[in-house]
Image 1 (tube, helix red, strand yellow):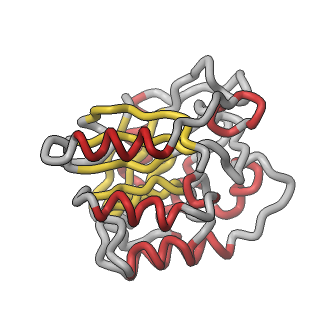
Image 2 (cartoon, helix red, strand yellow):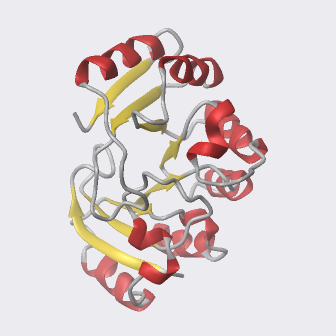
Length: 230
């Protein structure tokens, strides 16, 4: 397990819970505007934290912290993620998983076995522009479609979210996304912010007014639409 970081206390990463966040290295996408280069590119990663250190910390914080957010990078690329989360749940914590939705079978197993309590899944863009947005030459979206359906059809609390980048997202993309995830409970539009830890420089954000207009578009398809990071 490539454990690259631990934020010991957070009030924002796991909605409604005092939590910590565990950052796992590695990702199967290469989104050029990603602000976590140090978690995605192997030559930028630091030495892994020892798993025993993580569980010693979690044992000491039992009764203080309520939840653990598993984020990245992309956590589901790790074959031992199921067992890792199972050990966290045995300590009595609630678990939130951040994912790009590329491993629907693993996500289904975690949900079916009551090992995750909240899922935040990235919707990178409209299906027509997905491959371009995730920085690959080609990618079969079937796993993404399956993951969306898993969340729409299960009872686990979830959110879909899209980081809106001026150079990648248009009004037509937002309409297409809305049609795709129609009926979902919560959707977050996240304003892009440049970072020194970005994979590729040169991208920009929309104005608050434009993001509000995109929110209005999504409200035709989604029960609750939120803006984040503005």
